Amino acid sequence: MFISLSLIFVICAAFSTEDKDDFDFAKREVLLRRIGHELLLQSGDSTSRVLPVKKITENEYQISFENELTFQPDSLVNITKRVLAKDPLSSDYIINVLNCANSSVAYGYSVSKNKKDDIVSCIGRKQPKACYMINIKFKPTGVNIPKGAYLMGSLSFLAFIGFIFLRSKPSKPRKVLPENQQTGLFTLGSVLFDEKNRKLIINEKTIDLTATESRVLLIFASSPNKIIERSRLQKEIWEDDGIIVGRSLDMFISKLRKKLELDPNIKIVVIRGKGYRLEINS
Image: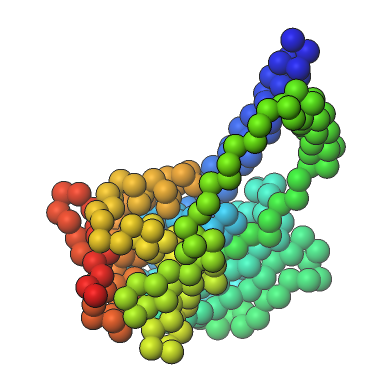
């Protein structure tokens, strides 16, 4: 009875912490849209849309726009500092403005809680009108020490009790993963997919993949020549991270197709009404 009550208490405390974190991250996404809105206004655009914010990794987001725009670097710096000051989790971050066409960095800077560590350059140089995306990478937040220590202590205690009760049970045979899942290497025709290092190796040529491209290709590589439903891709790549996207999936599929073009025997085909299939012709 005591163990059950302790477990319930720890679980409730953990969910309470998780709910607060979810709220803080949801607030962050609203603030990121605010940055895009104010940047469009500064560019003289009060009608076009800020597209849905994309979560690239756990601590990196991307703001994109419906139309081309121009911006003053000093205005962008001031907008982000003022807006993100309302986010308690955003004391340190790096911002890169990317060209949509080739993802090259048009402008970037770093902001730190300690202002003397800020890295800001090229103030006053107005950027030409073009299609831009803004990537914002936040410094990972640390664990609240008192709360974290309390939860870890409680969990350690429960783990010790559980070990005493369960050590007499015979252990289950370990599930052996396929070799490619153990090494993170997948052979797709003449292409070697290095999932851990996010790279494609084709005819001794190495092509880098983004984190999202690598996650998408991992799903295909694990089930070659099989239909992967569109809803599954959206759920496993984005919705599980709390962000629902629409056309973003098509964009990443298109980018993967281009990177796999060096091997004509590999292609990602659309299965109408269902999803996609990675076809490998031997």
